[in-house]
Amino acid sequence: MRFGIDYYSDTAYSPETLKQRDWSFTARYLSHQVGKALVPAEALLLSKGGIDLVVVFEDSATAISGGYDAGEQDAQFALEQALACG
Image (cartoon, rainbow, N blue to C red):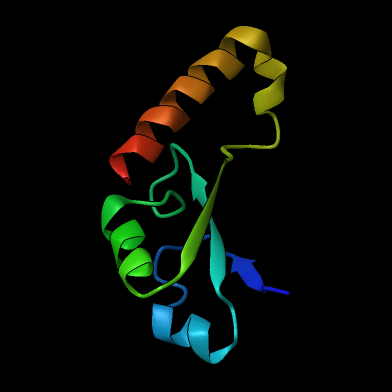
């Protein structure tokens, strides 16, 4: 069984710290919110450090109220952000 963690900030854990806690993956966010969003440098650092990534899009608890069109825009944004992170 594998263990991992999700966290909000790009400065929360180094690959070494994650490994010391027996976490082999982390879930990180794709988001418009600076500081919350996974960025290419962090993705590369984690990947090179042997940590697998799970990415999820999350902006706010009320984003769903924007309906289909807002969801489609968010999906396109998340795809672009994920591709930029490799």
